[in-house]
Image (cartoon, rainbow, N blue to C red; front, side, top):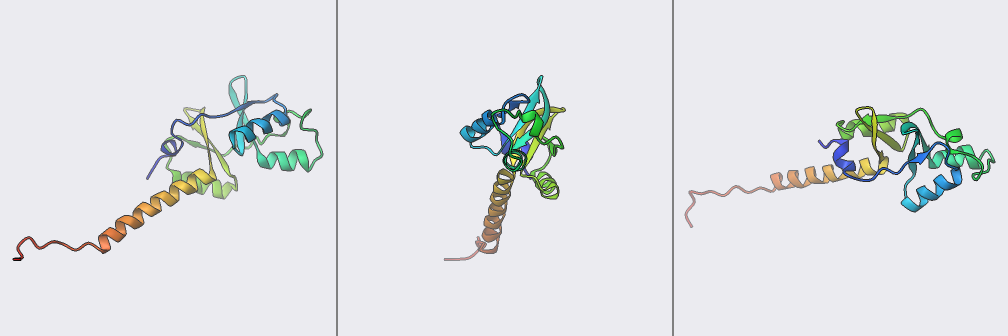
Length: 149
């Protein structure tokens, strides 16, 4: 059972400031090929800005992304996990909350972000490994060391 920290590894956490324009945040997300960014204000985590926020709170609402700041449209009800938690626990939490990104905390401080895709890939890898081991067990033929040739 892998911890969530083992999945994230040393990956850089891309963040944006609360006063960043939605347009600039979207550019950062596009350049980094990520679907969400933690939002920071004075070095403190204050929210998360996601693709869903762009669609639901900017595009659908008809707001100007150049003039709207992330802090006005970010999600503030955060779904978080500690870095030592098992990925299965985190996956279940995300599914229950119906979110695609999970903020990771270490001692109450931002330690990273993980996507549903990351966790599903880890789950698939672990299941593939288990299947390989089970197949090896089922097909194992013991060698009789006392048999004569």
